[in-house]
Image (cartoon, rainbow, N blue to C red; front, side, top):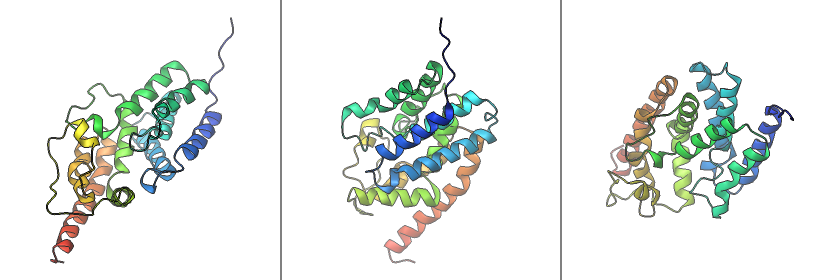
Length: 229
């Protein structure tokens, strides 16, 4: 009976990075490869703070999930077959079944749309928490503001329209349909909610500063819009 060789993480990492560059090349700068590198770095840093970086299996799951998390983002899908890219990649690279299943569970469950109604995953595991928190940290603060307006501009959205109010009590389907929305409303519908949705202690700590910066920005935005500042 042949013994399966352990995964060559260096090779898999290089191939995952190459896949990110190729698959996300046409995306706007809100969801490009630079976003992925930041999320990977944040996730590894959070994993260290949360005490799971000493487990090589955990850190491999964290890094690969962070690298691959936006490959099949619904906002950029051009073909339904793209949803299988990550799963096919993990199989081709010989990633062990238990790791593959955890990576896929993180990627498929970490999006805000899965928790928009307030019913988030109650059975999350440490690797899930650090990758999701890392992605959410990159959605808030100074970087988050820049990404939000970059995405809005790429979709030709209005900055603001006082007649279009932020939506509340959104369903998953309503959240995913943003054709009638303005960019500033995204702060109310998602970004300003993320601080209280962080799962790890390290993520919660880091979110505080970024959230405060964002609150100050939104206040200044409205003051300037209304000629008060």
